[in-house]
Image (cartoon, rainbow, N blue to C red):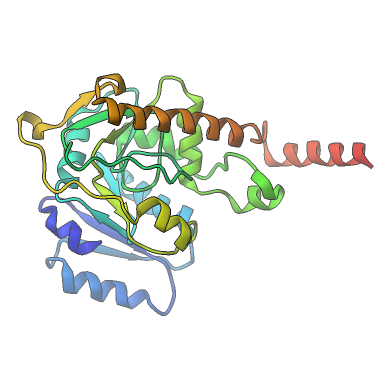
Amino acid sequence: MLETLLACGPQGWQLHVGVEPGPEQPAFRAICAAVLPEGSFHVHENRQRLGVNGNPYQLISKRFREGADFVLALEEDLELAPDALELARWYRANHRPHWAALNLLAGACGSAGFLSWPEEPAPLFESRCFNSIGVGLTRADWDRIAPVWSQPPGPGGNGIRDLLSDWGWDWAIFGMVMQDPDLRVIQPVAARCTHAGASGTFCTPEFQERAFARLELAQAAPAGPEGGYRLLSIDALPARIAAHANAQQESAFHLARHVLSTRPKGRLSRWLADTKRRLRGRN
């Protein structure tokens, strides 16, 4: 990921890396020192394991507390298109109150139907979908998202076990966006980010193959004013692209409705009490 980040021209950006504890922790600092210009990065070595929810949360939260007005959150197993940072700058400069986040890849959590038409680098659209593959946040976005970051959207197929282990922060934000009819996420027609790892906490080799193996990144920034990016309605996109984007919205709606239908109605203790009552009623 660092090599593709360098190709984006990160001059002027402050690069912060959150590293979990373990025997490989010193290697991350060495990798950054070998690849990134001296003085351009800061490595934050966690004293305790925070996990896939806590590690990005604490780092993003820290940056906003220290005065940042925009954060682009990237995981170590991602690859970027050459203009990924330009798109992030466009989002920051053109932000609107009903936008919840920028995604560098169009699609929703848990779906393998991501959208990428590399020959169409200019169009962007407002989406009801959200995913973790490259997330841009203004301070206003973070103020809205931070309170729901660690809230699981529902217990899922494994009941209480899923609820206690959490589905991940991306699912929590996805649920927040789908529950608010006014919120939208900005997503590009041509992908500016993809997942490179064959495995991970929430990714299997099979899902990697289906979702990302043949997904192409945009190869160049669009030409024109304001970076050449054009915000269009889905219906204004070329027909073949609009069909894909509309299918994403419909799929996301049905997925969210299924997940959110199992969401606890209040505090965890209240949900547990309701569950116990139902179980007693069956016996």
